[in-house]
Image 1 (tube, helix red, strand yellow):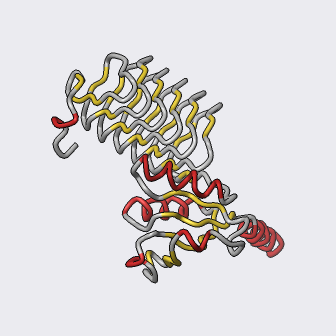
Image 2 (image 1 turned 135 degrees about the horizontal axis):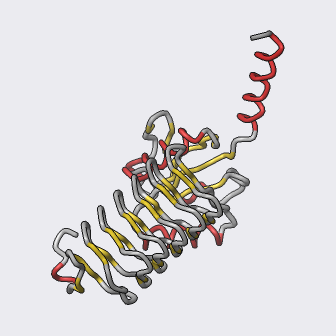
Length: 234
């Protein structure tokens, strides 16, 4: 390899580094560290720190990235132009934080681990996180602030609403629709063309063959509606 080609490669790498998006991760818990790993592996971001509302976390250093304070750090102009991704797994908390930060004028980053597979024609909303070994197949639509967790899959023409959490190992058949704010538990499977309503819960390991209404809780193989008091630790 010639010196000129080495120089060109170095310059290309330096230019790519300069184009990285500045990023804050909101939430310094376990999911926040998973998001950090995806962001670092992607090479697309310059990490500015964690934000966490628990003062006990302030000053922590997590894999070389500091917890710099709570939401008050985002109320001024210090991080203007720095995008935020929410590293919290709970849908309600993620929604509240996203709405509060949007009111403050902050934009959101989409973080995709390089070991995820994204098909042609896929649409992915802002603030969404797609983790390693996840697959989002062709012409699927994934909304804002969604978590497609480790090794979860969304098959062709799926539609995933805002603030959905697809837990590790979830498998959605082709054409499945999942409504806003719904949580699909670890290892659940949903047959093709099934529609799951908004703010529903699908239990871990469930096999869903029929549509699920808004706000319903279903579990089992095949899945069936359950009462909230039957959920136990789910």
